[in-house]
Structures are given as C-alpha cells and as structure tokens.
Image (cartoon, rainbow over all chains, first blue to last red; front, side, top):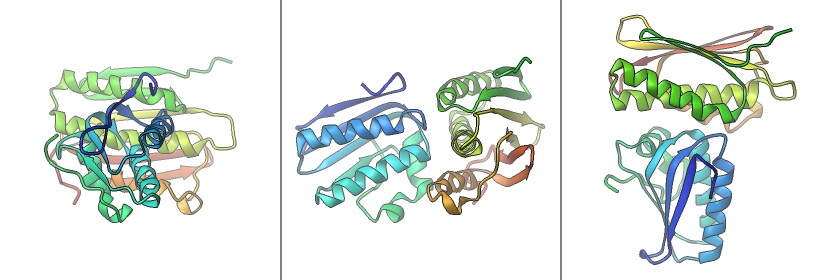
Length: 114
Length: 142
C-alpha cells in the first residue's frame, strides 16, 4: 500500500478513525505514507483520529514531519488527533526527543501502552 | 574509470559501508547495522538509538550534500574503541549548506544532539564529515 517498507491499516469504527502504521518510515517513503494517510482521512471524514504507531519499527525526523503535517491538516478541519506510541518503542522515542507537543501545539502526545 | 558505489567492511569492532547518496539505500543500511549489532550483543535500546542517530546523519547527507549536483557517495563508519560509546563518522563528497535556507533540517540535527555527544562537522572543498559518539548509557547526552 505504501511500498515495501511500510503499510497502513485502517479501522473507521474505533471511537473515530483508527490508523495503524507499521514497518519503517524514512526519507524514501515518508511522502508516500503521508499521501496515503491523507487519502484515508479524506475518505472517512472522521470526528476524531487516532494514529497508532506501536507497529512502527523505525521512524525518524522524516516521520516527525509527516505527523506534524497530518496534525496541521486536522487542525484546519478541527478534528482531534491522538497519537499512540509505547514509550520504549522507536516512535515513542522520537516523540519524546522531538518534544512533539511543543512543536505542534496540538494534541500530539506519546502514550505508554499500545 | 571505476567508481565503487557500494562497499562494506565489517568486524566486531568496526562497521564500514559506502553507499550511493540515495534514500533507497537507508533501509538496507539499517538492516546491515542491525546484523552487526546482533553479532556484538548490543542491547535493543542501544541499537534503536544508534539506528536513529545514524539515520539522521545519512538522511542529511542524502538530502543536502549533493543538491543541484550529481549524486555522489556517502561513507559511514561506526567504530568501537572499547570505551563507553561508539564513534560514528558520516562523510560525503558534496557541499555543506547552512541550515538557514533549510528550515526542516534542524529537526534531524536536534535528534542527533539529543542522542549523541561530541557532534562535530568538518567541511572543506572535498566534502563534509560529521562525527559524533553514541553513549551506551541511555540519557547520557542530556
């Protein structure tokens, strides 16, 4: 769906739109993943979005920018966004290092437990 | 003329790899580093931090060093000198550009600084070398 490195799973009925990201997100595929996530959100027109990063095996600043862009789009449509990333996971690590709450000014919070 | 675009040399004390400056090389380089780490018995947490810091350094070189010119190569070296950290070197043969005209660049360097110590950059007409040390102990840089 997003190339050999990453895939997206979607469930529209988990108290809003659940988007699960899996695999690896880097410079080679971040733009593709972003485009696919935006398509999924546009199709579902959800009241709220949960992006689940527990299945991400690698993510770096390219992924952080991806998340910020998703947050920006959702902010424009006043759609709440929540991120889920175990604190000791690759995504949880990047969220903590990047102080994503401060950067985004949004409800971007890494949470313990998937 | 023979141009060597890919080269690997691996011992338990040293990981060396030359790759084309292409984003498609990042995943295979991560796989090679994971194999190297597995053979050394390093912890998963340490490996995660190393992959992230190295990934940011490589990404920076791929994105910026060869902009507006023919893509070249990147030389990655990870060395264990037997102390409390691994020594990382990322060398390109491109041109260094200040971050002022690249607002997204700071995020990658901020991640390296959060994970590593002794971050240093040396640039000359032949290219740029980024070096840093990755402490085995978590949280050491802060």
